[in-house]
Length: 400
Image 1 (cartoon, one colour):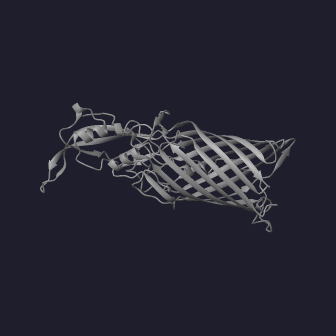
Image 2 (cartoon, one colour):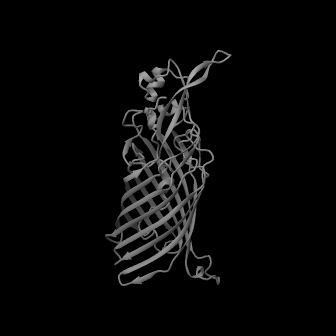
Image 3 (spheres, helix red, strand yellow):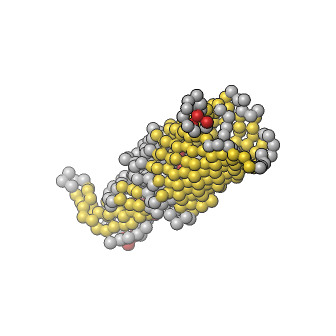
């Protein structure tokens, strides 16, 4: 039996789905303060070029990690359109608590374009997969209620409670490394707190837990988890007011899966089989003494595999310009500080070729076994080690 770590261990380190991975609970300026009643519309553009991801030991690895040359990347652009309503639908009722506390409802739609560069695309094709996708992402709907506003000397604060539901309506291709949609539901309750010190320092913090359903059609040969783990999130943002129009903020975000992601019967495999030593051994990193004859077949062993969970710590720096109290322009950069990505050890059976009655070759007896480490992909599994850039425009209709 041959146990070797295949060079395809990289099997495409993947990209995180930016919309799903970080946009729900990334606080900005006064994100959780009690805003005036009204309607707000926000457009957010996010761009990243991912050339590094975190492995399961918390180390950075280049995209491809040995299966392709360095310098390759996954380019992702994301546009989010958000609509927010703040008011009180119970103000003329006798419903306790609700009649005295404003509620808010938000709908978020996403549009996503993701494309890998040349060698990542070529590697995907060797496994019968594709590496890019564009289209509408999942739909997010959230609702919540504000707590009371409290004052103590120079400090003013309030809390809120909200719940977000992600509906998996986005475009989804089971053969693609990258997808705008996720193909599973998420429900995420959230508690948040806003503080205002001396009218100069604003602090917004939140904790949440995302409950994920199963993915009944995992993509990219099963390297997208079939049972994505739940996720716990804690984030805090500090904003300093320089003037009535200019602000700057620093943020810190922590995300960790609750237990492992699970992968049911991964099917990732070379598309062109049988393979020869010149191509198969080179692609799979098998040394010449271990090459099993002139040609051979490969097949991943069925089973349920678990990773070691995922984790990500992210730092953000942003600047704001406020125009006439009704419009906000915000530019931000987010830099990964540490992380842990999803990887599993996947054994492949090696079969000698046999001649079928029609003269074609088919898998014959098993002659050995090889072991590879493959990376989980997409938002539940891959943890990017590359920065992303965000540009936001917020507008208040009928501003007071």
